[in-house]
Image 1 (cartoon, rainbow, N blue to C red):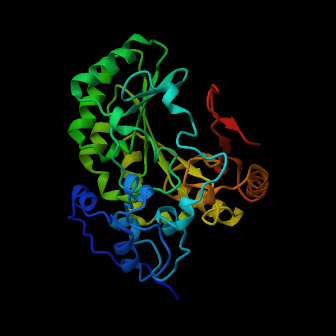
Image 2 (spheres, rainbow, N blue to C red; image 1 turned 90 degrees about the vertical axis):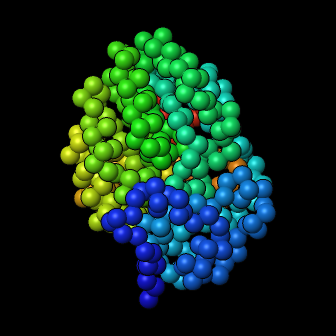
Length: 336
């Protein structure tokens, strides 16, 4: 029987220390998990541009000796990434056309994204922004003022979404500066964070961060990106509890991934596990067709069948919406 890998982190380990100690190559990842399996060579362009990143808390939930562990498969750079598959491209959501200023994406009415960092705690191999031109979208603080002026001048923007990268990789002081600046713009009513940090490094959810997010000026939403029930443990539960106690609305969106969560049993278990942690299922995304991720794709017909099976075993409030993002559309497109 395989066992979870044992990684030494303590309650005293700061989230910054854990982030700095992230595994950054396939060799170390395989050694920790006692695995031998084919991977992209270290000098492959796909790895140079989007290297391995796996933090210790997430690694600790993987099974040693199991090359098909569903958590491992999300982060392992297999040779299938190098396949050139028709219909997959570097910018599947055409975000370059919704990038009016460095650091801002404005795709939908009423809300805009701030790309506050290019950094992530983990590099998910299906990430639709794995080829995004972050070098052109990381302005300094003075240039961020232009982005804030853009938001202030568009009175239709009631919600600002902190994105990246993963915005919670930023220190509290930096996040606080953005929140303070946004608080001066009267028409911004909500702030939303899309993040994997509470799952990847639950130590990130500190008392000081919760105080920051409890700002009474805004209604704050945090959307976890979790794909499998085994991503949760008692430390993740505690992080979610702290966020809820701070008044943060917790939602989850998943990506439907072949070989990882493409079964009604796994999806049902994920919804139940989310609810136990105080998180509501929100979206189940069909894969964005980004170069290097074709091996993860589940077709829409199969996905619709999975959803019907899911609806048969879960109450409606635990069934996420199956969606696809189509470039140029005014909202996410329901897939069933």
